[in-house]
Image 1: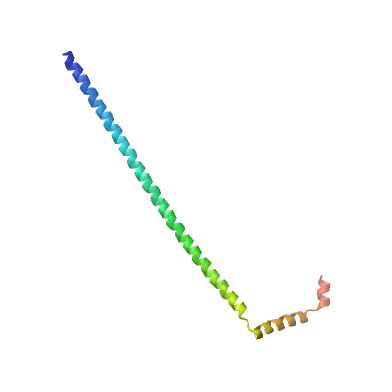
Image 2: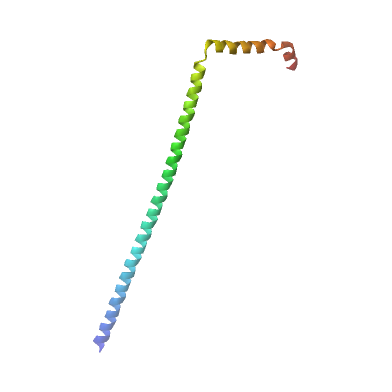
Amino acid sequence: MRSDIINEVLSVEDRAQKIIRDAERTARDYITDAQTQANELVRSSIKQERERCNALLQQAEADAALRLSEFEAGLQRVETLQADELDRIARAVVEKVCKTDLESYLELQ
């Protein structure tokens, strides 16, 4: 009779240890799954942010290239001014200066 009770206690203890091992394994599996999901979420977020930043960078590069080409075109226009255009501008400046009344200018100062 005592051996039956001892065997029953040992059997219950074995089942309890099996339940504990199963619970530990299940807990590890849950933690591993949660870590895997969290890692995937982080990777996905990083990928989206990288794509967004790359798109912004490409747009900024395109804008810079456009501004540079506009600036270079403006320089080319300045470089290609004809002599008669320069003379016209110089005459306009001289006429403006000649129209200036030096005495009234000095009075304002």
